[in-house]
Length: 155
Image (cartoon, rainbow, N blue to C red):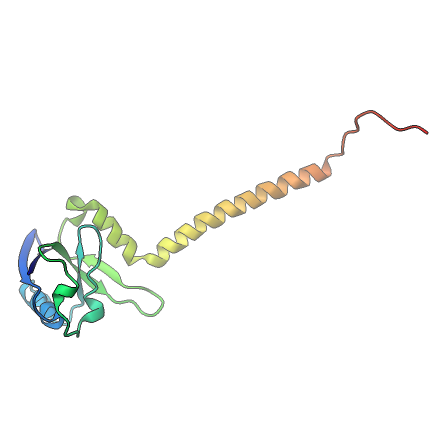
């Protein structure tokens, strides 16, 4: 049971997943020349996070999180405070050239609040525009005198 991890300048390493997650992460940092205090995770080419950061101290097997023979890309996780979410930086150079969809997905994951704000602003903008249009058309109708059909009732 193994996975391939890509990082750096097109480098890749094969890792055994038949070990505890805590040991897997330690080995990952060591073999990829990262600071032991660095917070890292893996993402597959479809953009699915392995969520190693949530289980850094776990004694579960890494094979329960990682699919056998899968290729993963090493990413740095910058933990946000309670308001901001985590930010994700790929540790594979030229990710945008080789995997543009994945680079875009990581950008969106790194700014979830910004994406939500952008979506809600666009929805509010449409709602506001529609409300203004409806309000204007109603006020024009109210201000316009009603035309009579020309027929009047006489007693």
